[in-house]
Length: 492
Image (cartoon, rainbow, N blue to C red; front, top):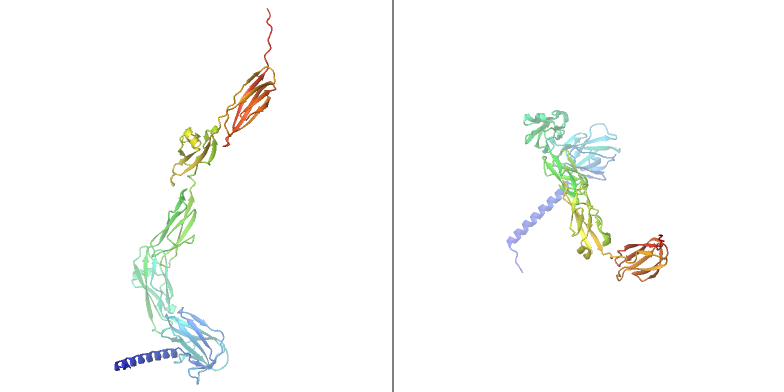
């Protein structure tokens, strides 16, 4: 078995002693915050911690029980557990309605020396403070607890040129208040100097870095004396201006957004931003529209607003036209380019009539382009003052048309019902649709026909040749059918 050393016993005794004092102190703290009333005394919690000038008013209350150990004057009671602001120095308990007996009435705080109803009680700390009020009788009363602030002035501040900032005094009797600048040169900056619990500081156009102002007067509570003063420092910064760059801009054909940036000078940074689209950054990326931004700094001065507009570019419209398909017998191609800034056609090995600089030139593809089956032309526009040049391309699909020609007699003389053959070169896979006027087709072998002419006059042989690529070609041959001239008699 391990022996217990004397040193260990001393350490153990020390630990026990420390724990005893901790527990004792905790019990003392609990005792200090325990109600002083028993026997069903109504108790109300009053929280004025957020306002040193706060007021709490009860509903109509009945009293009961005992406070502060009972006995004479401590029966038939009501209790209020009050927590004050750190900037409060006193409070007052009043009875504002209900029957009250004649003679003096008083309340106690933490069962201490009685304080007359309506009289102030100076405090140390925020509490909780246990107020008890006892009196004979069973009537109801309504109570009011008023917090009295310490004499003080609003916190040091920063203000901008062009912005009037308010100084506020708390805890003074207003009729006794005096305001002044510690440097009398700046007294003229105050809008009120006497008998006012607030005044405004009006910064000069060229202010100093700061000015110190004093407020003095009789405290409301007078817990700290019959006269009090406090000072506040006002720091001056230049006036704040805000603008957006660019102020007004054009969204070009090759852009989807513009960057707008809020630029701020003066004031007391850091700045905060709120754009009309909800963004809170200094810059935003946006499209066409009007946007405003609200800028504020670390002063209480009014915010600044400014706006900018983005419009779509209308000075640089360009189009090369729609893609199309052309058969070679329909050449040349009529180009349909449009451009508000003019332009030139780029690409193509064929010919432009009158020139490449004509937006609506006629274009005849080259033999190589026809063989390739397509040609792409690009209309390159000229730049405008605020946007770069733009371009657009058009592709024409090219198909070879058949070289259709009709061969056969074009002059028929003599009797009617003469028969003639008409034909065109055969292209395998093509279809041939023939028709005639002034006669009838008596045989049709695809690329050739035999016609019987049945009427005198001027007529036509018509052919539509259609290849597999659908480039149909229409051809006509004029035929004249006439009688044989009669032979005249020569006289001697």
